[in-house]
Image (cartoon, rainbow over all chains, first blue to last red; front, side, top):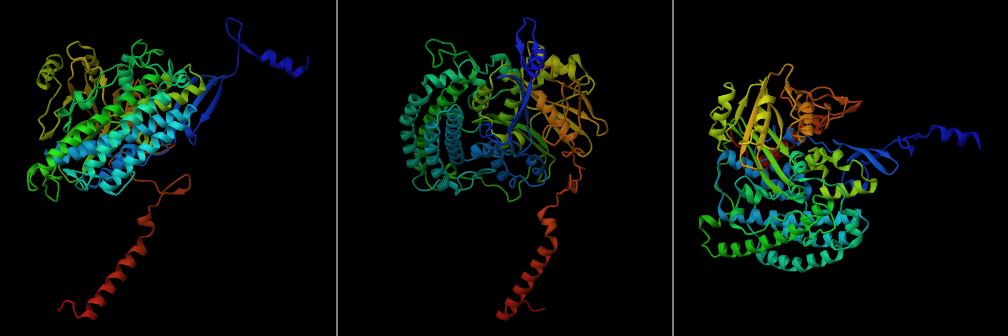
Amino acid sequence: MPMVAQNLLETDIKDEKGRVQSEEMVLSMGPHHPSTHGVLRLEVVTDGEVVVAARPDIGYLHRAIEKIGEYVDYRQFMPYTDRVDYLCSMNSNHAYALGVEKLANIKLPLRAELMRVMVAELNRISSHMICVGALAMDMGAYTPFLHGICHRELVNDIFEEVCGARLTYNYMTIGGVSYDAPPGFIDKCEKFADYLWPKMVEFNELITGNSIFQERLCHVGIVSREQAINWGLVGPNLRGSGVKWDVRKDDPYSIYPLLKFDIPIGDGGDPNGTNPRGTLGDCYDRYVVRVKEVFESIKIVKQLCAMMRENEKLPADHPDRLYQARLPGRLRVKRGEVYVRSENPRGETGYHVISDGTDKPLRLKIRTGSYTALNCFEEVTRGLLIGDVIAVIGCFDIVLPEVDR
Amino acid sequence: MDFDAIVSKLKAKWPTVEAPKVEAGDRFVMLPTKESFEILKYLKEDPELYFDSLMSLAGADTGRELWVIYPLHSFKHLHKLYVKVVLPRENPEVDSVVSLWMVANFFEREAYDLYGIVFKNHPDLRRIINPPDWVGWPGRKDYEFPADYHGIPTVRADQFFADEVERGIAERELQEKQLLEKLGLAEKK
C-alpha cells in the first residue's frame, strides 16, 4: 500500500462504534448565494453531507433605518418603512401608520381603512406568490416561479395605478392613504380575485400535490408547538406548527373584525388533512399554510370590493367617503410609547414608537418575523442535509432587508 | 387579567415595582434592575400570568438613561404587558432572559451591539448587525459617526459637495434676482 494512503487510513477518526467519521468542514454559504434570498451568509459546519451547525451571519444590508427614524419626523419616515421589507411595502406602511395613529390618537374615515386593508391583502397575495414560487424553484421546479411572478405582475399593475410605484409604494400616510382609488379600481380588484382563485387551484395541482416536492419538504425542519412559541416564530411559521393565532383575528386592528375569513393552520400527519405524509410543524406545513392564506386573502378582497361599492353610494361629502383624516400640518404626538403589531406576510411585525413630545420619535424599533426566524435557524437545521437547509430558508420565507433593517 | 390586576399582583411580591401614569400610548411596568430576572421569570411561570411569548425586546437611549423594553404576551390568557427596565449610561448591566425565552438571543445581541447594554449570562454576546471590530455604540444619542472604516471614507454626499451646493444656491438666487429686475418685478426698497 502506498505510504500516503496508509497515512490517510491512520488519521481517520472513528466513533465509539468503529465507524469512520469524516473531518468537519466549514462551508460559507452566501452572501451571494442565489437561494439564500438576499445577502445572508451561513457558516455551515458540515460532517459529510450532514449539517452540524448552520450559523447565520447577518448585517450585510444594514442601513440604520431605526436610527434614521430618530432624525426625520413622523410623516417623513413612511418611505423608509417601504424598504424594511420590499416584498410587502404596503403592510409595513400599515404597521407603522398604526403605531403613530395609536400614539397620536387619530381616528380614520371608513374609506381610508377600506383602501388600506384592500392594498394590504393584495400585497399579501403578491408576497406569498414570490415565497411559494421561489421555494419551488429552490427545490428544482422552475415553472411555479413563473406562475407566481405572472400573478404578481397583475397586482403590481393595480398598485401602479393606485400610487404610481411597483415596488416601494409609500402609499399610506399618517391618517389615511395618499390618493383615493382610481376609476375602475374595484372592478379590477374583483376581476383579479375571480381570476386568481382557479389559477391557485391549478397551482395546487401543479406543485402542492407533487410527490417529489412533498418528498423534499415533509419531515424536514420540524418545529413543535412549544418551540415555535418559545423561539418567537410568528405568522405562517407559527401557524404551520399548529398554533391558531393571527393578529388580524385575535388582536384585531383596522377593519378586520368586520371581515370573515379563516385562519389556516398546519395539520401534519392528519390522514384527512392536506399533509398526511409529514409531521406537524415541518416545512411542508409552513408551505401549505401560505398557499391556503392566499385563498383567504382572495375571500377578503371580494368582501372588501362589496364594502367599497356600498361606500361609493354615499354622497361625496360624507365623512366616511374621505380617504384621509383631517389633520393639522404639524403632527402633535404626546409623550408616550406604544408597541403595535400587525400581521404581515412574514408574520407579526411590531413597531415600538417612543415619543418625547417633539415632532421626531425618540426611538423607533422594528420587530420583524424574519429576524426571529433566523434566531432559531441553527436549532432547526441541526442534523439536516445541506440541500434541506435551502428548504428551511425558503419555508421560513426569510427576506434579508427585514432582518438587517 | 387586566393591567391593574397584574400590577397589584406584582406589587404584593415586589413593592419596588412601579406603574407610572402615561399621557398617551401603552401603560407600562418599571422593574428594579437587580430583581428584573426574578420578576420576569415569575411573569413567565406563574399559572395566572403565564407570559409564554416575548414579542420583542428593544434597547433605547433617552440621552440621560438607557432602557430595555420587554413587551410580553400570553397565548394562554391572551393578555399583554409592557415591561421596562431603566439602566444607567455608565456600565449598563442586566440579566439575560435567553434562558426563559430563546427568542431573546438575537434581540439582546442587537441591544448590546447598538447600545452597549451588557446582558449577564447571555450564551454568545457579540455584535450582530455591525462588523465585529466596530468601535462605539451607534444607537446612542451621543454617538459620533467615524470618519472612515478601514480606510474607506464615510463622508456623506451632502458634506462632500457642501461648497458646490452653496455656490449653486447663490447662483440660482442671483439669476432669479436678475430675472425679476429684468421684468420690473423686483421689490423696491
